[in-house]
Image (cartoon, rainbow, N blue to C red; front, side, top):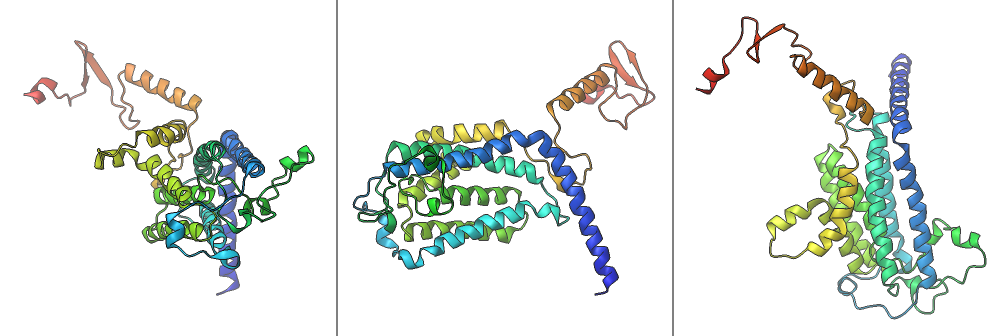
Length: 339
């Protein structure tokens, strides 16, 4: 490969990245509030998880069907679950930023992270409510009776409470069980790629990885099986609640539907506009603000009142007779069409 070709390719890549950055910054300047709120809530969720660790009471591990079926990985192999989750997280982050490099631009990175953070925050809010409602004895090795990490000592100052101690505080946390935070992130990422991704094989692989992640979480004893099951139910009902009720009308899932779908779907799908499809090839595909949308509606109404269609290509003069618009030399009687 010649140096000239390499230099030309590098120049194109730099121009592409520069152009993408300018577009994303323009969107970010208008849509930064929800992004900031989502990032702040990640910290709040971490504080809540640390707070419940102070309340955790170690005790005998509860009877669990998943524990009976799946062997325990133990302290030596517990890293497998975290390694897979790290792979899922980094893969999704890199995919959301691929429009800066590749030409296949189907979405805007800022907009897709707004939706992801909205789903995460709503699900994490429900999670905080559940694990503070009932504290279960942690099944992981560091949360059992006799472990010095099973309970946090009383805080000596406010700074100690506000310090999440990432990532050690997350890995060795206890008490924040129902439902699994790892599965929240995993399923939100997989469902997002299912909707906005383009490679069918990757979609199938992502669902297989999500199932594998579920089994590894139970095998590593990070959560009880119910924590993983509830996480799946939250996101299945979140996106497919109506389908389930149609296929299985005899199943009463109204309580879960009220718990998840009405809150999360209303917040995300009703409050956030759908992502524009960048593959359409339109240059002016940026999200339209409410002010611009009202202006366009007013212009459209003005054109219709003046007897002009919304199509900019249709600029033929029209005469008006007896309240009916007639195109010059091409009028078709609507009554004759009906007959």
